[in-house]
Length: 162
Image (cartoon, rainbow, N blue to C red; front, top):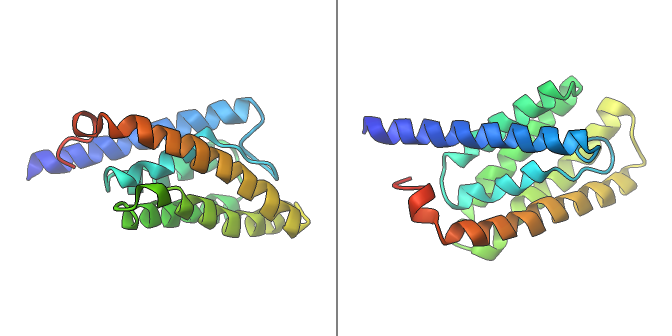
């Protein structure tokens, strides 16, 4: 029992750390904030397909990323909650491989434009829905599914007993 807890915490911590690193790389390239957002880290939102440890992992990673990036309080709170909702949704759809990226795409496309408008005054909303949705489609849809397909071959070695 103790080893399962340690495994869970270790996996969650590693996923959170990867999320932060990937977000900071995207930020350095000018891709991860404001109206057009392509966060490489959002590909990790498919990881709950493999392990429930990814749920707190991507949530904490997103929370830390938003804090480290100097995000507005509304962005830190609601952007991170959108990622949490996405992770839970992906976990709930874990038996349907091809649906894994749908929760992150939907949650972020529906939440982030309102956050951008309220926290940063970025608009119009309709444009944010398009740009955030397109970024999520690339990040979670394309990169996330590629990641899922690659990791699926090694799921027993990487996500052992989770």
